[in-house]
Image (cartoon, rainbow, N blue to C red; front, side):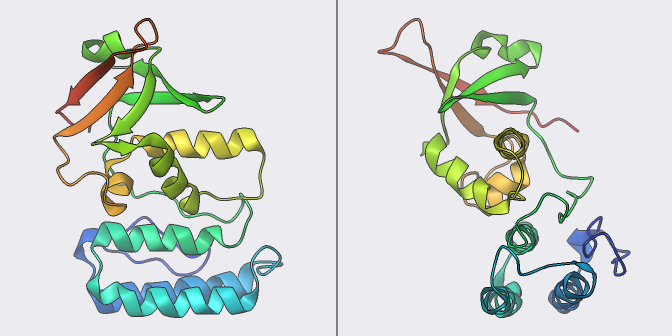
Length: 202
């Protein structure tokens, strides 16, 4: 599935979409086991009691989660290590919207896109499907590998901001092909410009 336990021993040779709930639980157990065996100081950022509580909560929750939500829990669990060297790579079949952002101060600005969305270049992103960007950023922050520079953390946020599977797992998008990105036109502060995004990039 493209995920492995701290880049070490255990890998599942199935696409993540084909895993059963039992296989997810086995893999999650292997993930924590590998972290404990291979990380030099796993509990330097988060106490072992919190790690153990989170492990049991996620393990028991897997049975009722979608695959995307399980992957999200994996990310949240690994982020407890609190360093940029402990991470899980995204599966290669994740879907990304062709919109690239940069964070200037507290504003999320569109800096690159497909030609058909160029009218929104340089504009501030306000919301996705009516969810405020501040709420979305707070949620994405829970799956970022902490313990690195502020620049690294902001880049991690913007990299995940255009990934459908993350936005869906947090409940911000329900239909992959009809997400609405709302931008504020800085030249006309009283108005907002809406961008209806339909196709998905491969």
